[in-house]
Image (cartoon, rainbow, N blue to C red; front, side, top):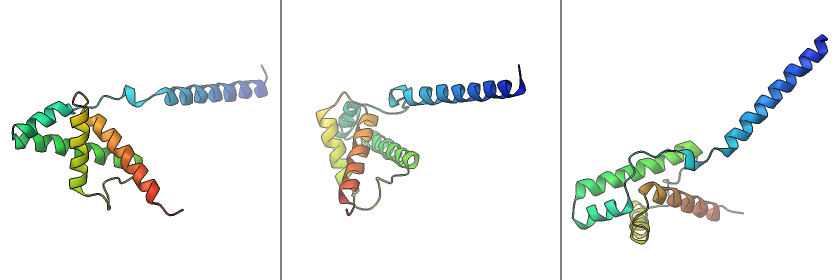
Length: 125
């Protein structure tokens, strides 16, 4: 094998490897991620109803940390100005009231998307 053919084969092998890795990476999804510590909406609602302040605060603290993690990972600060903590809590309460079997991480994902869309809508065009 000539030197040019050998170099061509190496380049093609590298390109094939890069394409394989790229395809594999694009097939990875949020479904493949395990979220730790997320309780259900029903657990959160039960804590609020029974005045278990410590448990409810723990759930909301987890929720805020989850949103902060999404903000850091995506470089989009959805917890910035223009959104009050009270409106966020009202949103979580409404979501959990409607979907008690869902997890707080599900609520966080949807709230994050909701805030990103709100932010996009408020940008001047």
